[in-house]
Image (cartoon, rainbow over all chains, first blue to last red; front, side, top):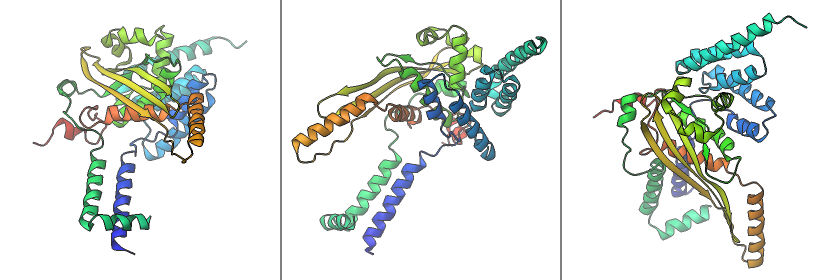
Length: 125
Length: 233
């Protein structure tokens, strides 16, 4: 092989790698952006966004790179569906992982607990 | 491929080829931006670690733009090392509190707004352009955003920038003008049916936040934060 071609190919590879390098992310975002987009395109559908967030958290936890806000995002969807115990656990996890979220997470945990008490106080009919 | 390289090396001496490659690599390294560095004194003094991205104000005619845009806003800001409050959660909580009008949120007191969430700063984004301009030969899709970061403690402005991205589908000439015209019409029709703004919005956000001189400086979760805060002189 012509050495000049070899050098060009190596430089081209370096160039491409440099380009790719900048698009590597610190956190594992999965398909969060497109799932959120789909949710806004069709707000009645929550399940695909739930599924996407669940997958990101599952994979992110293994590598400890769950993006900021996503435990809370997932928790809030569960909160709106009335799955309060799960949402409390997620808000607590967000708070533990990101101390910056403390004030908001404590508000959300209090609100979830309030609703949970209301449900438990109401006798089953 | 090999033919092309060989012909290039025939036209230019070997040294030139090296030179071109070197220039290419250097350009790739500094493609993020050139210019005068932004004055980050206020950010340095405040050392914010969290950013509240509030719903965006829309100046385009596309009513769906703000929601779609919001899905692209968190990633670059979080990757730059800040805690980003979950955008969908923030939007829903504001709506529950009767603050569904983004214009109203943008005019509200940033200190009070930040206080509701416990945020260090508030990021206000305005969609200035989100459109597709149709011409006979090519359609150009353009997005333009304006970003202002305000302190949640003093309410003062910390950073502002503007980012524009355009895309014109490449229409390669077939040599036959009639075929070209038909191909352009098809491209325009596809763009009209569903112009894809999302990659443009992502690129615009990325370049606004990550720009080396005018972007957002690294936040506390960024590996270069300490280096930025205490630069070696």
